[in-house]
Structures are given as structure tokens and as C-alpha cells.
Amino acid sequence: TQLLEQSPQFLSIQEGENLTVYCNSSSVFSSLQWYRQEPGEGPVLLVTVVTGGEVKKLKRLTFQFGDARKDSSLHITAAQPGDTGLYLCAGVYNFNKFYFGSGTKLNVKP
Amino acid sequence: GAVVSQHPSWVICKSGTSVKIECRSLDFQATTMFWYRQFPKQSLMLMATSNEGSKATYEQGVEKDKFLINHASLTLSTLTVTSAHPEDSSFYICSARDPPGGGAKNIQYFGAGTRLSVL
Image 1 (cartoon, rainbow over the protein chains, first blue to last red):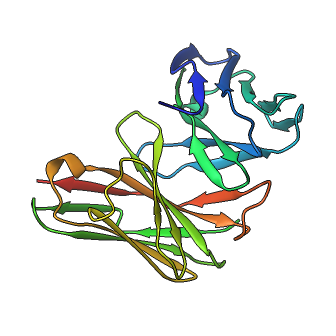
Image 2 (tube, rainbow over the protein chains, first blue to last red):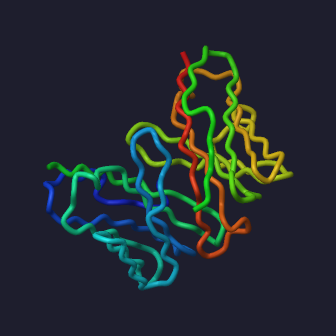
């Protein structure tokens, strides 16, 4: 059983399209992080959100933390083939335990 | 940003042998490191929390005697897969926490992973 559920699990889109990935839990997070992982490599941190309702932008990526700190979303505008990868959310519980979401495999076709 | 080095990146071994994987924090001290296991096209599953100078804390279902963890210094944690079998074949990833005590941000920096193949 995953503490954090991500949706969708798989996403295949054309270059230039927009997309949103969701990360949900029934528990409250101390903070939440989004990572991107390439095959055969470790995850690379994209962003950390701490405050409920927080919105952070990283170029074409927009991250939002839910008001209740139980959910988060990642929105990509005008996706590019270079955005292809496995996107993982990771929640921190009680400032100590750290668990990953189920992952979203994104494929952006040129 | 902080750098975590993991070695080896790929190892093949015979069934019944033991394999040691090292995880080093290169430019910061890590009192706590984490070991994860990842199956193809799946997310990371936390195996254990490695604490410098004390015993590791294992997640439910992870065999302590199978996956030995040693965190002898502030920059090095090792995971030894003992008497490896083909079902232990997987991608193992370590991470180190910064700041060391955790806290609200509790950022984790990851190694590049070790692909273990047991024949």
C-alpha cells in the first residue's frame, strides 16, 4: 500500500501540450518534494514545498501544495521531449519519515 | 548542492555471495542516510534508515539479517546484501539528509544508484 498515490501512472503526450500530475494522501505532510528520475540514475530534486497553499514555479513547471498539506500537483506547460522521465513526489511525515509516491512515467513525443 | 556518491554503480554476482554497496556524502556530514529499493518502472521503496553510530531502523518486511547496514562515520553508510539470490536483483539507491537533523524541508540528496544482478 502506497502512502502517497500519484496519478496518472503513465502519460504519453505530444510536444507542446500541457499536463498535470497529482500526488495525494490521507495524511498531512511536514513538507513535500518533487523529483525527476532518469533510467539508471538516482532521483534529482526539483522543488520542496512546505507551506499549505504554496505555489512555486521552475521555468515551465508549476508546483502547488494543497492548503491542508495532504496533496500536491505538478503542472508542465508546453512539454518538451527533454521533460520525459519518471516524476516522483515524496512526502515528509512528522519531520522525519520520508516516503515516495507511486510515480508518474511521462513520455513527451516530438 | 550536496553530493552523494554511491559505489559501485553496477554489480553482478553469483547466487549465495554477499555484495557491499557504499554510500558517501562528499561535502556534508550525514548523521542519517536512507536506503531504497526500486523495481523496474516502479517507485522507490524505503528499506531502512541508517543512523551514524547506532543500529539501523528497518521498514516492515525488510529482513535485517539479509540487508546489513553499517553507518560507521558521518560520511559513509554501507548496505551489504548477504547470501544474495536472484530475487534480490534490483536497483538500490541511497540518500543523505540535509540538514542532518531533518526539519520541515528535510531535503534528501540521492546517490546515482546501484544495479545489482544476481545470477
